[in-house]
Image 1 (cartoon, rainbow, N blue to C red):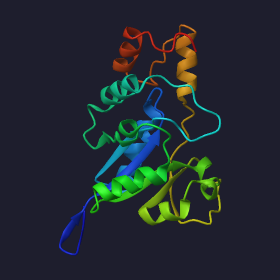
Image 2 (cartoon, rainbow, N blue to C red; image 1 turned 120 degrees about the vertical axis):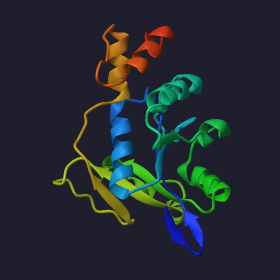
Image 3 (cartoon, helix red, strand yellow; image 1 turned 120 degrees about the horizontal axis):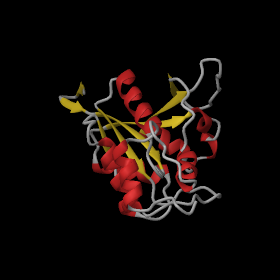
Image 4 (cartoon, rainbow, N blue to C red; image 1 turned 90 degrees about the vertical axis):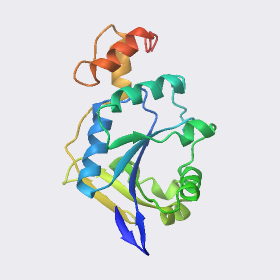
Length: 199
């Protein structure tokens, strides 16, 4: 926490995503950003409906939340922010962060994105207003890849982990088990609920 105006200011990271399913690269990014920037906590925020033109195929939020809870139960410095699931509808980061800032005015938020999203920031909904509400943290996969942004971004260098939820779903649909990519608890949960069989 940081101190100012006689108030303790909590520093919270937000990592948004579909988390269909959550995997070890998500957890690695969240925890490394937390440690490197000395944040109090990083919250993984599952989206209800992504605002992209190419609508993502996803499963019910209940399953995604259950898997997040299982994945995070041994990591007290990571948590879940459910505001977008609770609100429903299309998930615009501006609207979400406005609600969070109104609800928690003393929290300083850090919005975590991948380096591939940096060049798209000018196209984000109400990006200028969003920039006033959060600090953007961009995860750079390689120090050799430097992107110029017209917006202030703090870069965090992490090794590239070529893991995706799409790959995991494909593995499961082909009868394979994604060991070492997601935890055994998630593998068991996916089997018990017959998820991703028809990808």
